Length: 143
Image (cartoon, rainbow, N blue to C red):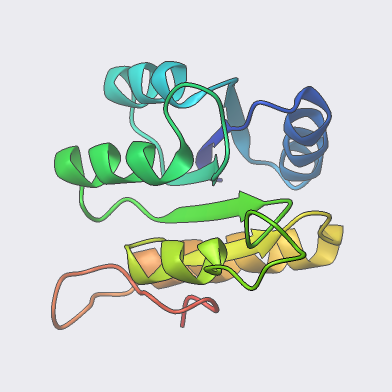
């Protein structure tokens, strides 16, 4: 199965994703922020990353940018509890923006276990298929 890195500052989210992924046989490593996640990423090989968008220190967007500088074909699923900063103001949709900036998929918290597992399966399968342009899939369904 896949080796997956989860980078999220919420311990409950970390534990939930880790449990779901380990139950289906994946090897999971956890980091509590972008800087730690990047250090772990640089020291090992991962098949897939989960990055929370809003974290203290280095956010998920910056972490994704740095990951892609080193290994541009690494698939990343960005997650967030809020697609926008403020629900009362029509602001940018950060999950959609993250996908445009290179995430292969995104999930809004709270997500259903089946949605998380489906996204993982689709992204891992897409990463295994040869791409004519040699770039990762960029839509939310990881075709």
